[in-house]
Amino acid sequence: MPLDRHFVRSVELSTIRTRYPRTVGRNARLGSHGSGGDSDIVIIRTDTGKVGWGLVAGPVPAEQLTGRSVADLIDPGSGVRHEALRGLDFALHDLAGQIEDLPVHALLGGHGQRTVPCYDGAIYFADLDPDDGPRGVSAVLADCAADDARDIEVTWAVREAYPDHRILVDANDGYDCAGFLEYLQAVTECDLYWAEEPFLDDAADLARLKSHLRDSGSATLIAEGETDPELATLLEIAGRGDIDVLLMDVVSFGLTSWRAVMPTIAELGVRASPHAWGLPLKTLYAAHVAAGLGQVDTVEGVPGETIGADTSGYLWRDGQLTVPDRPGFGLPLT
Image (cartoon, rainbow, N blue to C red):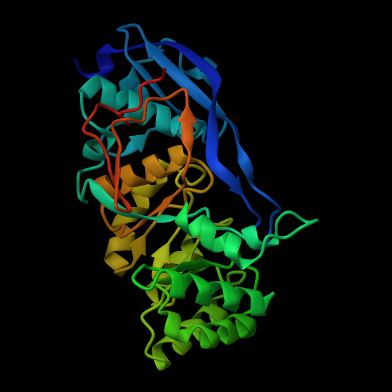
C-alpha cells in the first residue's frame, strides 16, 4: 500500500534511556559525561497500524501531522518534505521504511556496505577523574580495553598498548594551531588515522595544518564540522583539500540534510562520518547513513544500551557493525 494510503492517527512524545557500560570522563570542553540518561523520542502511528519512531531532531509540530498522509510528510527518495517537520526526520524515515517494508539504508539508496568499521568514541580523559583522586593514564588504557604533555603521553601509551589499531584523536577545539602542530610533531610515529576538531574552525589554520601533514609525509586525515557547522564554508575548505572528513552530527544536522549534501561531498572527493556522540542509538543511525549513502569509511561507536528498544538486529563483531535488513531502522520499541 503506497504512502498516500496511510494517514497519521497520532503523534506521541516520549523518552528513551541510555546506559553506558562505564562512566565516561571529561573532554577538552566538558566535565564528566556520566553513565547515561534520557533522550526525547517521537512516535508516529497511522490509521493502518504502522508505527515509526526516532530521536527528536528539533521542534515537533504534532498539530500539523494528524490526519495527513505519510506521502505529504516524506518523500522516500529525498527525505522530509517540509523544513518545519525536520524534528521528525528519524521517525518519518522509520515510518516510511515500515510501510514500504524496506530498511532505511535501502531507502537511502544502498550505496555503501551494510557492515561498517566503528571506532570507540568514549575514550575520554578518564585519567583526570575523579577530581579528588585522578586515576592516571592507566585508566585510559583500561577504557581502551573495555595539558600538552599529558596528551602526548596518553597517545603514546595507547599506541604502545594497541600497535595494530587505528588511533583517532579528537581535540574538541582545545588547541590553537601552533600548539596542535607541536603535538603532532611529538606523536608523528604514532601514525594517527585522523585528527578531529584540533582548533576552532579557521580556513588559514586548516590550510597550515594540511600543509604540515603533506610536508611531513603524514597520511593523517583532518576531520571537521561537528560543532556549529557552517556548511558552505566547510564545503569550500574541503574543496581546497584542507578537510578530509566531514562530521556534521547525524541528529542535529539531520538525515534529510545528509541526503542532500552527500552528492556534493562525493563530488569534492572527501569522506563523511556523521558525529554520533553520546547515544548508542545515534551510532545505529550513522551506520544506516554509511550503508545507504556511502562515502563513510568509519562510524563513531558509542558503547552502551538503549533501554526500551530492541537492538538485536544490529551485529557487532571485531570492531565492525552490520545493520539489519528489518524495515525502517529495525528497532522495535519494547
